[in-house]
Image 1 (tube, rainbow, N blue to C red):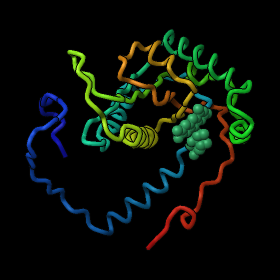
Image 2 (cartoon, helix red, strand yellow):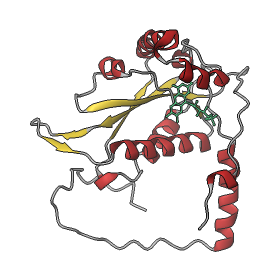
Image 3 (cartoon, rainbow, N blue to C red):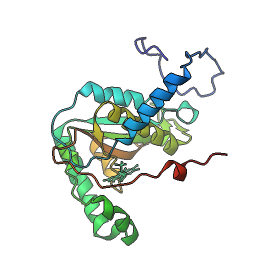
Length: 236
Ligand SMILES: Cc1cc2nc3c(=O)[nH]c(=O)nc-3n(C[C@H](O)[C@H](O)[C@H](O)COP(=O)(O)O)c2cc1C
């Protein structure tokens, strides 16, 4: 594990630098402890549900920051770490994001999505009203850095951006859940308004808005069934 108390080394794309390995010798976990931990993790992760009705109660800000730090440890194509997490706490900014999202969602639900997409969404009980964006005490807006943009305007290609950011968001959701918070991956389409409201640079493209908080006292979730192991696992 890297020393998180050490002063940070400057980050720069390691473009064209030679290979400089360092030893990596993590202590091996005994198998019985692995089994116990894996079973407990599986049970805890199975309890995660997407929440769409949030309490306005505040959450400890450090938990959000630690979860984002966990997400930022994700593997990424060529270690380019092509992500930015914008933590939106300001109620006025959340209100503007909600308004812009609802404008897009109304057009989507009024026909842009098409009947097949609407039918897929019906069991989830979603509609164009996005109260979670102003009820939840914080939004994490995740941006993909589609390419690297130097201060002098130089651009450099990023590799496997979708995959890298998807993995980081998975780690974010896991960290939030295991820290006792609920979240929703919200993907209004199109999402260009997020970059505009949050003043993000031209190389960044919104990936998702993630409201985070505690479930409302009267929170309900759709009665979904997850695929069983024999439906998701192929052993060869
Ligand atoms: C990439 C992605 C996009 C999603 N977009 C939305 C969305 O825009 N609105 C929404 O209410 N839920 C959205 N969801 C949440 C899914 O509907 C939810 O994960 C799914 O129904 C399974 O429920 P669970 O998370 O409780 O297991 C999204 C999830 C993912 C992974």
